[in-house]
Image (cartoon, rainbow, N blue to C red; front, side, top):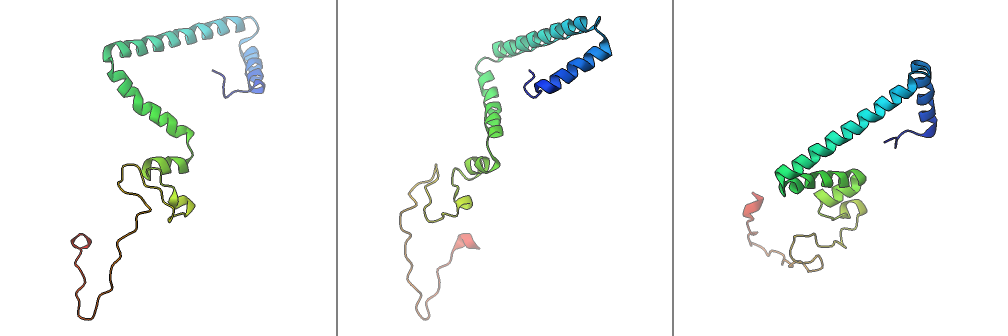
Length: 133
């Protein structure tokens, strides 16, 4: 709960609460806060359980994108771009374009030689590439 607050900050908050509320009201305020937090946790747990019961297996499908987002939060921007946009091909970052690994989902390998073309002779027409126009 206090993962982002260090001991120094916690002590400052405790002293500020002691000054603002006074020593006679501080224990009651602490017990009220702890009861409220416990009740909020119970409500959240009950709502989650109710969603699981009503949605059944679809609840896991709903949680899958959230878990993928949590994985992205832990990644560096470079790793996220490489994994999701470039299908794991990091040659754009490393500059190793010759030693490319085949991307997942593609056929063939990067080491297969490209077909060689013969130079055109005098008067020969170049082939027409319909996709290029």
